[in-house]
Image 1: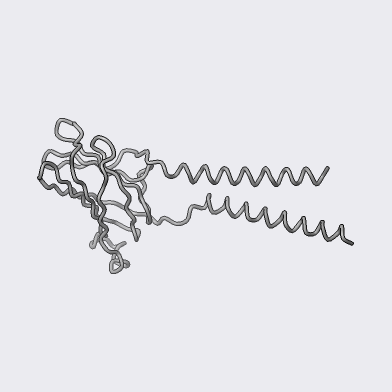
Image 2: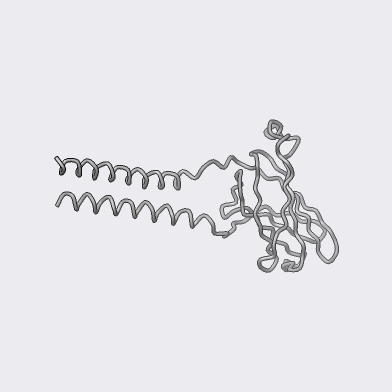
Length: 184
């Protein structure tokens, strides 16, 4: 009876940890963007948004630029490219300036006035993101200041996998010990 209880508890713990880790990791990929930074230039309003919480970290980030005209109508047929480079005047960026190269990304038109893609920031610090927007043959450049924080590992996912592996090792050790007692 005791053996079945332990086995059931360990199995349900493994399943719970595995499902919660998978659900958490899956929820991170949604591109439900929050309100970002908005700038206007020559009749175009451009809003820059990152991830769903608008927090920018080193590594891969979802990025979206939303374009509107003076009448607040979405601009649907535009070409949008962004380039990002570390701010050379920033004290935080001076240490890693040599290895931080400018990043260029072409954004895809996903919905009315929304242009999305991914950008991979290499270093933490202040970055200048320039949106190169071409509408009806006219080119506009809009600059945004972006503070990039250190990304680090996702400790919930790492902890979940570590917990599952630890449980498997413990169960294997207990089973081996039990099988060696039966042989004697």
